[in-house]
Image (cartoon, rainbow, N blue to C red; front, side):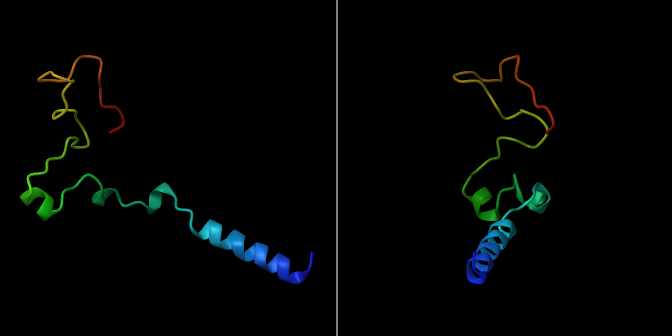
Length: 72
């Protein structure tokens, strides 16, 4: 391969790898929170991060047994 092709392949590999993110790059604090506008609009979170308190089964008033929250 000539030098230009090798250089182009190297640049492409660097660009692909630089676009990869690890799970530690994701900010957990920004997840599962409503903005002030969403709160004003009446939105509610279904999951508080620990319990299934606001979840319910289809056409039921509460969650059926057998469902559990594990590992938050």
